[in-house]
Length: 153
Image 1 (cartoon, rainbow, N blue to C red):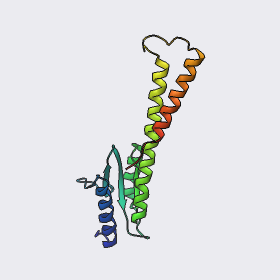
Image 2: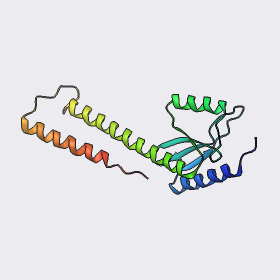
Image 3: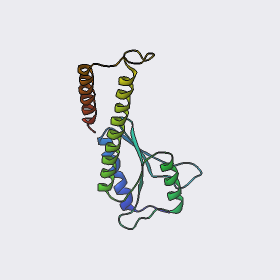
């Protein structure tokens, strides 16, 4: 089925946006299969998502596309169906927010594991005096605050 010129224009503008972030928008054509999203969007700092472009207002996904999108989501990938540039920019913002949240959660887990491990991970940590416990709480608070200040591209 021939593509709509409006859809191709939106896709081209969105690819330009990805390039401005220093990323790549790879055209997907999986041999012998149908239903794959139009682009795999790769952004700096290991951020990625799939983008399916549709005609403005009346573009609909086919049943095969919905099946592939569902499979990708079940595998943990993000899939966005967009019919305008604003939706695509919102997808990038969403990916950035998810990445910041995931990194903060990972950092919190690392800090907690380090704190629980004590100075030697093979031996349990000795009970802390109140002043050391307070200093540890301050350090943990500062580390978590620093993790929440991660900026997006």
